[in-house]
Length: 344
Image (cartoon, rainbow, N blue to C red; front, side):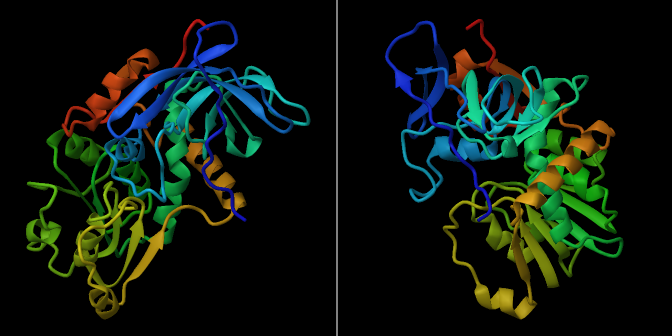
C-alpha cells in the first residue's frame, strides 16, 4: 500500500514546564488555539525534527473553515504540513540521517508545533546553504510535478491553470518548463497575476468573482477551450468550471478542487468531450521520493522560486491571528509562514 498523510501522535498536557512544547489545535471550526504537549521521543526507525517553518496551506484553511467533509477530518485536529526544520534526535536503526541535518518534510500533518517525529520516508535533507524558509514549500513540489507530467503537456497544447494562490504560482513555474503553446492562468487578484506573468504565464485573466464562469471571460480568445486544465482552487465546485473549460479530448488534472463539490456535475459533458480526469498524488512510494528529489533540484537550480510569494511571517504564539489573516481573501496575502522556533 502506498503511504498516506499521517498525523504524528502528540500527548497534550495541562501544564507548562520542562519537556513540554507549544502546539496548535483546531478545537472546532474557526477556532485554533495553543496547547501544551510533551516533546515526543523518536521511536525505532524515526527521527525528531525541531520545527522552524510551517506554511499555512490552502488545505489548512479549508479545515479551519469547516469546508472538508467529516470523512476527511474530525475536530479537534492539528494542522500544518509544509514543514522545514532541523533533525535534533535520531531513533534506533536509522541510517544516513543525522542530528543537525536541515530537512523538509512531506506527508506529515499536525506540524504547527515545536517538535514532530516521523519516519525517514517523510524527510528530505536540504543543503545547508538553502535558507530553511525556502525549504518548506518543497513539500508541494512532488504533487505539482506529477500533475504536470499527467497533463502530457507539449508545445502544441494550450494549458489553463485556475487559481494563483501559493500552489497555483508554483504550478505556473513548473508547467512553464513543459513549454506549452499557451499557458493561461486566472485569479481574482492583480498581485497574483503579476507574479504569474513573471513565472511564465503567456496570458492572465482577472476573474470578477469566485462564481464566475471562466469561459465567459476566456471564450473569446480560446473558443475551443483548453487541452489541459489544472484547477488550483480549494473547493470542489471548481471542477464544474474545469469541465466547461476543457476542449475535446482534454485532460483535467485535479491538483486542487479536492474538496466537496456542491454543484451538479454534468457527466454526459465529460463523456461527450471524451475527457480524462486525473488525481495528482503519486501512486507509488518510489515516485514520491523521485519527485521530492526533482523538486528540490529545480529550486536549487533557480528554476522555481519558493520565497518570493511569502507575504507574511507570524510566530507560532500568534497562530490564531495568522489563520485569520490567511482566511481573508486578499491580493496582498499569498503565503503566510509560521515561525515555530522558541527558546524551549
